[in-house]
Image 1 (tube, protein in one colour):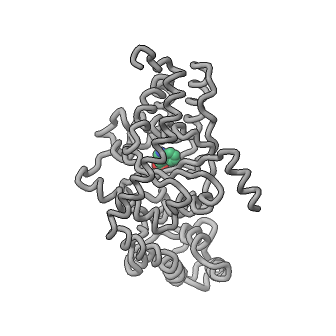
Image 2 (cartoon, helix red, strand yellow):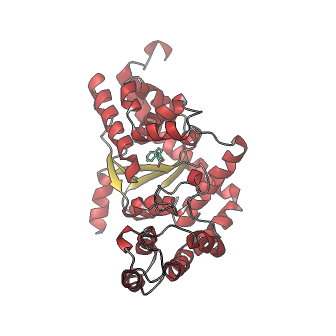
Image 3 (tube, protein in one colour):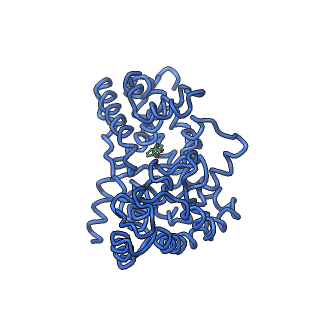
Length: 341
Ligand code: TRP
């Protein structure tokens, strides 16, 4: 096993992923991203970004951004991302992210960006603010990944088109400049990536008000779950339900123990336990898992100097890798100007 780990490192298997600091983190971020990252940080060279330049592509409150960044970092640490094992960094502190994004822009056809599904969705959602940044979002994301020559990118399914675009950009770049500067990044899909919000319909997202936040108290969790959407066909308590279409059951599978999962599955199908009882069990289990995380988030948030040290260290480490890549990029595109040396 030790040997295998050694080999993985030798292969220089680098991973990059990130979350936007667009609000407090919720269990969708936890199940769809961070929980999966925890299993990767022992075996790969991981960089976990707080991608603040992505977060400003939609309307946001400038006064709140700093708190959101601190919140996100505190959540990363509280969930168990370990700065001794991985690099934790804030995107905007490494200028090369935006610099590389600009260069990649020049090999990315506008038509590729126009057909990205998240761009179409977001243009509809934010129709009064369809800005260039929103459209260019996937190119900045490609820059995040390629700057570190990441081989793998753990993401939720909704991000797959972005990753495909990153690969297309790599092929374009390598072909245009006749250099194999970047490897094609592959996706790693998280098992909990399909979790829906409490509306049972949409992806969990702060703007849709359908989230359980990592910091929610036991009471908050219960309040939110008690009104969460279940199997719409199950009207009365004794109606037999369909766990396979119920979002609450999906959450049980991610938070509850085997025997409880079986219990609610059987009870629901037979109509012998009601949605409320099922939700009570779930609320307890979610609270069990979140309560130590919640405590740690609060601890870390009270130590902004500690967070600052971690992010400074992350900046230095990532900058070093980024600058190496940029040297190659400058060479490829002809920007290694000799007369300036
Ligand atoms: N677009 C990603 C999301 O919303 C966040 C992100 C930005 C990202 N840059 C990245 C994810 C690079 C993986 C790699 O979930």
